[in-house]
Image 1 (cartoon, one colour):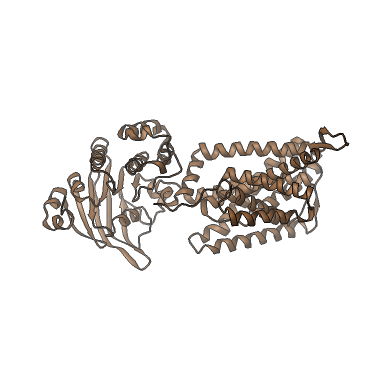
Image 2 (tube, chains in turn blue, purple):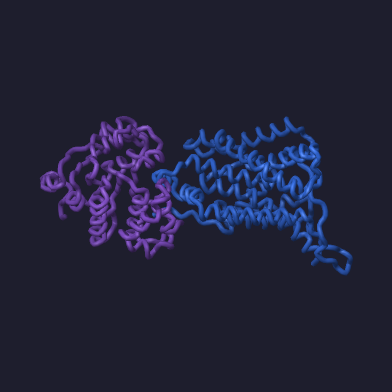
Length: 305
Length: 235
């Protein structure tokens, strides 16, 4: 029981991160009906920005702390947002209106380019990240001596995710940007006819997704204490799986899918085999696509009457 | 207010508009009648840049708008209630109306909302219901109301009577007249329901196969034997 609880806590943390990345996939899919295959790289770039900023702050004499962690988080947002904006501008917008496969291919090209860019600038080896927020507390101790530990960082990750989710929900439901974005999702031509700048709305959607993925990247860099230029690929695919599981196009679905994928990965590693955790996750993708392609909270595509 | 000269548009190889000339003056209600597939809706959409004109020009209040992107055209004071109503199905009535006001001065919002809900009390009853769950008539009211929320000087209406019960058609046409007379909104109305449209409009145009074949005051067109036989049989 204690062991299960410990794994659930770890899985939840991981799932929160997948959820944050998955939101970017699902929002972009919602608005342009395409998967942004360069999205995982934005997350990876977020991790690297954390490393660079931490090194800079360390050199200036600031030891890692919660305050520093939050500063790095905030500082990373404009960088990853800029990457999100550039991806849309370079890989998607020029191809709008061309055949459906074209932007997909250019996004994959963008993804490879960004990986290589980071490899070129930062090197191909694993980069260590100093521990930002060491320690935690013991949640409970079993008679056998097994203790359930919660790291402070796990609390930060989950709390940050909750705050971002609430903020994002308010943004989508209550603001005029959110309404414009939903209008573009439901009927892009009508949105134009109301005077909505559709290009700007799409760009903002990419930026918003990239900001969230960047935050996820920073938190993961702290959490795992190591980053690598290829990290975005696997994390991106898993977050994509989470988005599909939750129902692509649905923001709450992406979060739910993320949490489930995190839990599946952690529990599979704990009880079956850690080597095959990725297989477990992608089997979920296959099963969902076969048996429930709309996902848990997805809306079936109904033809307009 | 609106000057259209030699306007052409095509869908692929199909020429939908073959050189349209027409004018709408400030304060008028002008109607465009014609059979299904004549190109009426295409004309309304081409005025808004969807699709973009392949030839000719559109001027609005003296300004050339033919090449402007759609959203910029709509920000000049033109609003359209399009073919098929295109109400946002998964948004509430209130959200749909708010979207209509997205380019308007927020200071007017409360007054404009009030005005639309007074014109269409039905929408007030349904304000928190999703657009997709409304009846056809209610959606039509919502589409017109949404267009009015931007305080347009020129209102483009595409077949507001389509699929509606006769009583509702009367009501909607009465509302159009009200908007025009009391608020000075210029109206360009596309209709298949030629009888009602010509009675309502100051002037009318008849469209056949992407061309304007007849034009004149509404009452004159109503009396025209060609129009009578082609569009008013049984009316």
